[in-house]
Amino acid sequence: MRRTPLDLTGENPRRRPSYWVTVCVALVVVVVNLPFLGALLASFKTDAQITSEPLSTPVPPTVEHYKNAIYAAGYDFPQFFRNSTMIAVGTVILVLAIATPASYAVVRLGLGGRWLLNGVAGLRLLPAIFFVIPMFVMFSRLGLLDTVYGMIVVDTFLNLPIAMVLLCSGIADIPIAFEEAAVVDGASPFRILSSIYVPLLGPTMVAASVVTLFFTWNDFLFAVILTTTNARTVTVGATNFVTSFGIRWGDISAVTVLSAMVPILFAVFARRYLVSGLTLGGLKG
Image 1: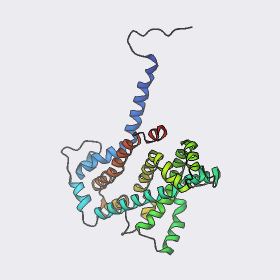
Image 2 (image 1 turned 30 degrees about the vertical axis):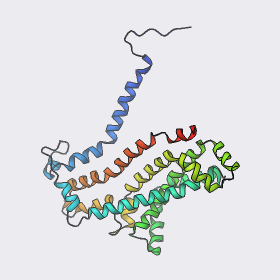
Image 3 (image 1 turned 135 degrees about the vertical axis):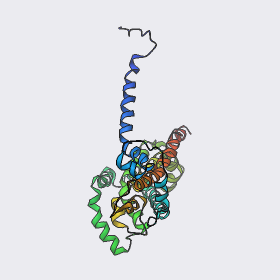
Image 4 (image 1 turned 45 degrees about the vertical axis):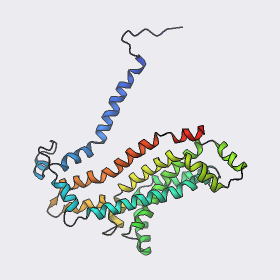
């Protein structure tokens, strides 16, 4: 048997490549977050610094753009933020309410099978612009244009396929023995879903909620076409700072930073929830 040479430095040679993996991951994270970092720096610069020194650090920093983002005339940030929050929360609730029983029906009850799941997932692969005109025509006839309820319906339609894919995978990973024991005790499919699968699907449902909230909160295409004033969101409201006199980059950057805080904080909360080991605890119990 060939032995591995002894490393007198005390380091395991098999773990050396992990250093380069860490460096590569760190570089990817930096590159991906450069736009947000640029917006963060620009939000604390004066207009003159943004124009003359776009890559410099804000010295001294200013909060004037954040004041404009919240209190500027013609830009109702509280209303836009409220609309975004209502649309995101409503979409997450509706997506989970539909995707959870639908995924259970596909995986455990055999309704539609893999063909139905593939067909639903295929809808999300189509370009979003493909659905804009049909949605606009349908909503205009139903009176749902520029309404929070209309945006919830649209975002639910767009995010339901992703949630179903995640939940179907989560349900398939749960041992069927739990359901078989409940069937022997006379439990109905609804009781099995609510008492067994929903508690064990906690981490998966949180993951689906995170993805749904991200896509809903950052939606621009449907929000800019299907809303005008009453249901305008934060992301679309930032276009108010594009005027005939120029683009107010500092104010747009401040709005971008403020709007990004919600998904970031939600992701932090979801990460802590995902590592709580609910699935492991359910399987052991």
